[in-house]
Length: 191
Image 1 (cartoon, rainbow, N blue to C red):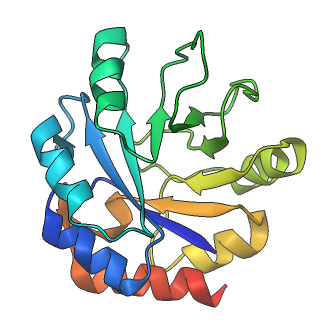
Image 2 (image 1 turned 60 degrees about the vertical axis):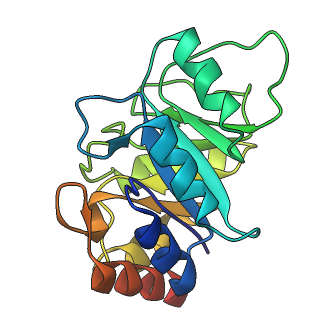
């Protein structure tokens, strides 16, 4: 099972998640008023803290093409977008689209995140997520309300390509908790 630890705000948190076995690190940019949103400079520091085999993902809820260009200039391995930007040419980086309950399945991306709260941490409807997995030709990532306590069961029910967690590994909004990071990764790997 592939695991993305998202909403990382400090280089040391990225290194810890990576050491525990996270496959990807998500950094939120251009998404105020989120407590997890960081500057482009801080995003670069976090990305630079990871090793060469950890995927870096710039996550944004921006609707601005100018912001998107700045995000792409960071040269992350992937961008995770909630807004339905269209591209004249396929970007050099992978594109991950976030979808909710009534959103159509996109085909102009490399993967889909099923997150009905669009980053709000509310629990996902697992039957809907399972339907998306069965209907999509693209890899589907499960997000929304996942915790160390429920991730293994969610994986067994949905069979996603990967899981994505932010608030489920925090002791307070935006503050990562090392014990929860380690527990989440261990639980996801046990599924």
